[in-house]
Image (cartoon, one colour):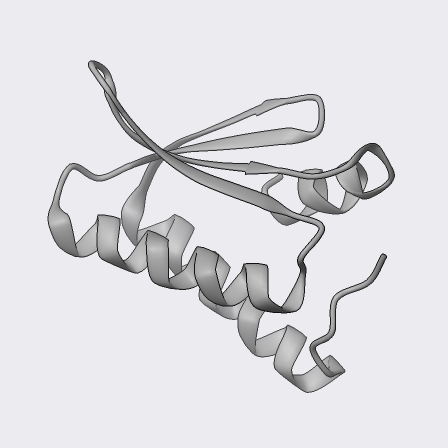
Amino acid sequence: MACSLSASDATGRLAEWEAFVADRVLEVGRAGPEVRLRLRDDDPTLLAAVDLAGREKACCPFLAFSVDVESDGRWLRIAAPPDAAELLAQLFS
């Protein structure tokens, strides 16, 4: 199980995730092999989350993404299989 991005593309994608979290995420929660990102409550943020998650899924098909609209906000959930949980935790630490 590995990401299909080259090293330079992976560095760029990591920078995208860092910028996304800094600009558009209000809260990060972790539970086992899952990360929940509470998103800002606006449509551009939701569209950016779907775009970034879709591109990430294309190179890392072992990750699962979902968007949840709940009473306490909009959430992007990212789940990893057990052997990739540490990678996910490092990305969002």
